[in-house]
Image (tube, protein in one colour):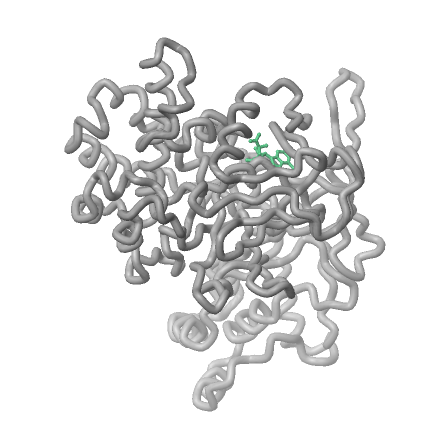
Length: 506
Ligand SMILES: C[S@@+](CC[C@H](N)C(=O)[O-])C[C@H]1O[C@@H](n2cnc3c(N)ncnc32)[C@H](O)[C@@H]1O
């Protein structure tokens, strides 16, 4: 396979094919892509439905396939709570990393492929291709993070939770087994930095795949956006937003035990089975760009198959989807943002144009981009319900203020919306403000007798404005206007242009 002299990738491809993977080396190559690290390109025109590569399930790396949980002892694994969340897979990756590099050192610098395929360094050539530094906000200084104030990234970085799991679960676990985790490895391969690095590898590269069942359907496939079942029987798609599947690995008799490392009762808060999360070699070398997906990973009983979903011309990049998330998620998970041309004039539907954004030079010769005409069409503005409540409190007269608590309680019982999401690109002929937001504002503004009556009927105010120029509408608009202004002021990095259309009923 052409890798343009990338020796790490050459070793990886050799390992991949020796271990049952197949790549169409006439059709694709791995190369450096400007500003995106490595990526895959088409070596010839490739038709739709073409298999680019396949890999056996046993080549994916998860807590189901790694020998570590069994070697450590499944009971002890649970005692150290390594079966919850990502912490177990993080430890498996740190352990693979340690042995992938220490074994090379043991063999006087000569890479020993036989050793790599022995029990505890099976994924070594793959692990050596993975990044060990990241630009994601997890690694930003406090000052740099200040630039993200007001965005949805801030509440989702989760550094404190991650570090708690490291100190409470990982550190005590590695101290219990000097054979698996030699003390000489601790300061090099099991540091807090190494822990964050392994976590970031999972965040930016792991796949979520529904558990395989005999009838050819994945369990929980509705849990993940972007997973569509293909017409072809027995083929389900996998996205890089998620997890791994049941691994059939007859060479590892202990595997059945490993499955019990994590069962459905160990699902995390979002209902995901942590052992569904897996690293998928080769598939994770594909980059992504908004609206540009042209290949998808499908899972079949024995293999995972990367298949083209569009025609790809020679020289074009092969993109796998990350589900086209907003830039806040892209930055947090992958460390990059998507800037595509926004054609607001023809916004009948999502209106991004996915050609590359050209940069121009300013007077000082620095590359600049026109942020007004480029962006990510999936971007959103999140408005928390408590901001709405705060604004309404400022508007309401003293007598009405007393029952605000009751109104909020009723709202949460009935609608459960505590955050409202505004698209930054609004399709033509659609209401721009979320109906739930309008409903909440109207509820908070209702005169007390109307509130009492609405509650007795169990009917929240409608999520649209009344027809005509009523006082009710005027007040609702004042509140919405103030909410949007305050939300805008929360952004440290400047304002966001949100184009608000009046709801159709206005
Ligand atoms: C699944 S990996 C893809 C392979 C990766 N480029 C590599 O060199 O190993 C995802 C990472 O690739 C990079 N990436 C993917 N798509 C990108 C894009 N459109 N722009 C910039 N970086 C991108 C980001 O660093 C992201 O975390």
